[in-house]
Amino acid sequence: MSNVKILNSPPVLNMPWQDAPAGEFNGAPIWRYSENPIIGRNPVKGVARIFNSAVVPYEGKFIGVFRGEQVNGIPFIYLGHSEDAIHWTFDEEKIHFVDDEGKDFMPVYAYDPRLVKIDDTYYLIWCQDAYGAAIGMAKTTDFKTFTRIPNPFLPFNRNAVLFPRKIHDKYMMLSRPSDSGHTPFGDIYISESPDMVYWGRHRHVMGKSPEWWESVKIGGGAAPIETSEGWLLFYHGVTGTCNGFVYSIGGAILDIDEPSKVLYRCENFLLTPEEWYEERGFVPNVTFPCATIHDSATGRIAIYYGAADSYVALAFTKLDDIVDYIKMHSVVRESDTEIGIR
Ligand code: BMA
Image (cartoon, rainbow, N blue to C red; front, side, top):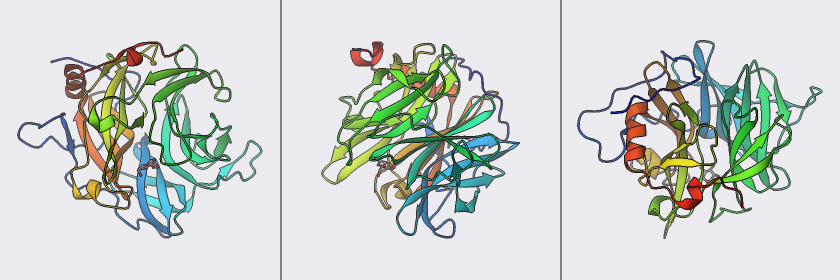
């Protein structure tokens, strides 16, 4: 049994938690919250569904940015507040973005937000239109003023995740270049920036794999967790079936100083659609991780994932156990382990 530590992350003693059910795991040591989904349909006026959303501890409670599909079908980002990170209340108004001068600067649509704290600033990263689907970004320190940052990448790219600290004095971001449709391909890349404006030195991190559950495309999920074994990444892997895509949750561990190098990559999915709220909904068979809350004191990890493009659900794991499982079932290929520059 390893003794892995979560690094550079304060304890979150009030994080949501439920012990694992009795009995052996069939696969990965990860289990769903018994009261899933934690956010149901029509959660706030004018919003039909909330899913694919990100949360963080904030001032002793929790705050989050939520993908709300409005009743006109257009997705936008809504702020949510919670005492326990399970029961959420949402602002009825979508998040209001401004530019550097404080003037309105709203995207046409916005979805799949991530939320990452670096030093004292919280960064939002999402997908929006920039003459094609691309990544949008903003920052806030108080969750009242949200100031846009220039879009980091050209279209088409719908899936970006920021690291929670600089590496070699550079901000680091994972992303997944794509196409203008439902994208039947896709690998995870990493880019770095000295200032959150200019992004470059792009490197390949990991590709889709021959494992059936991630054989079409993969994409970043929750912000990587810094651990004594490397960056623990929960990501999504997609397979194709005669009835469409299936989105599962995968796990990998990236090198701490050179995260384009994959140290371990689990050949098995960690979680795949099995419950009614994952299998049935607006888009069936989707589990899409966007955030974790983790406690460095206990190694407890709560994974927030969108279910069937209709709900938010919660799963739990323990750092030691999930790292052991990923290492035990690791298969890394040459394109994963190399530096990723060709
Ligand atoms: C992806 C994204 C996600 C969505 C998934 C399944 O391309 O659009 O927001 O959850 O498809 O529909």
